[in-house]
Image (cartoon, rainbow over all chains, first blue to last red; front, side, top):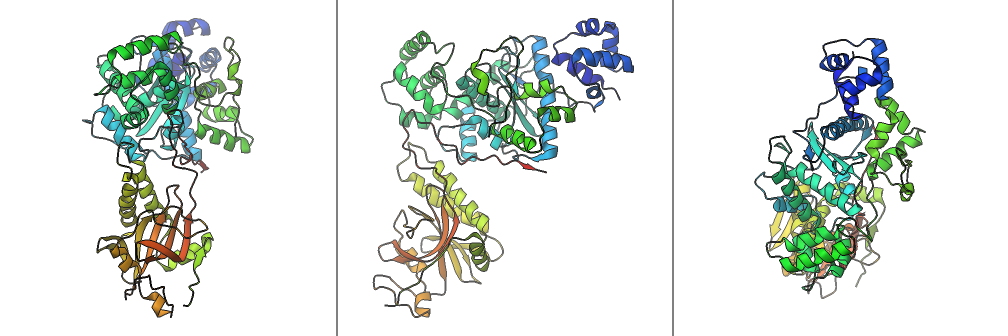
Length: 366
Length: 208
């Protein structure tokens, strides 16, 4: 049976309005609206046209209804600066990501979720500390956050949205935690994004994270506080950092916690007992800005990549299967599967400039 | 003085057979050791320097109990010595942090054992087989064999039957069963620019 929701999903993935799709497919806008509302049955010729324009296999539109994601349950960092098209495309990517992981769950035993519920009254800092203790991390720096998340059963995928407006997002679906990461920013800032999303998963499981009328600012600040405390435990910082802190020292020290220089400076100045005075913090920020640390991360670390997907692809390849086979099983265009792995797989060819719509080649790294 | 022939079992299957006879399970012992490792990790750099060892000991004992109590294994507490015991087999298992487990040399406890440990850990089994212990060993008559789950800071673990000599050290082990080798989680002397190691994390993916 034709799925009206799948037509809507594919259209939103392609960032098309109903009118835009109608023009490209040579049908009336009303036809699209009625199909998406389930008011009309789709005739085979129309489905063919739509599939051709959207570049989705026809069979995609006859799969069972997708699990709907709404903006109310998904944590978007920059909701205000995001266009509706960007938001809907990202939500659609989330729905496809759930389907990809559902396929993985059918074929592989993956790490079980190990993300306990904490008292909602906990402060973000206390929740970060509690999670560290639960995972047995102590106060050590986290050497690979992406690997840590995957090992604890959090489902991680990538985004290739070509926009800074969708940094990352996360959501709970059927007691499974999902996080989507954008590799648009530096490796250090992507790590902070991942920790921020972990904060949402821990802190905001039971409430709205970014509803249109919700108080998005406070939940975003809470997730940031969680991320800072989780990545940079105060006890470890106090034990390591000397009394005299300079911009040079921050540039050196940030490698320990794998965060941006700005994030470390902010952390040092925002403890209850700050290690930087306001004046010192301001001076250091100016100095870091002069050296390019405001817009980027010179002398940065290597981007983290998915260990889980590396193993999955190796397993598939041992059967001479690749992403195309996975996409075929899911009735998806292979480009959509590639998009979901974008930025989380090792990219040897990343050094070259990306031209237009060219995608970096995906390869299995042993 | 008759010498003791210590037994060291490194082979997995041989070790498991031996553990079966003791009504112990390798995985549960290793899990107990992981309690200790997690305890160690929760020590903050701002804690006193001996905190990691204490938390490792406390959670190691907790782990022994949490993983093993039930059926014939019960909580054991006597003279300040804490662990588990099996009255039917006349066995006790205590916990010890050691400098190196699964090494060539017999493990050495990181902290001196108290008088209670000496009494608990020196049964009359040597006398029973006609072995004369050195004079320095305090002997107490008793029916129990007292094993130690020995865990080092790298995560290596063995279940061993030591002689605790006067003064609180392990003299040597009569029996050693290697449980698991440690990984390379050396205690890193952290400089501010040294990232940590994540070799303890593993992601296991298997086919259905």
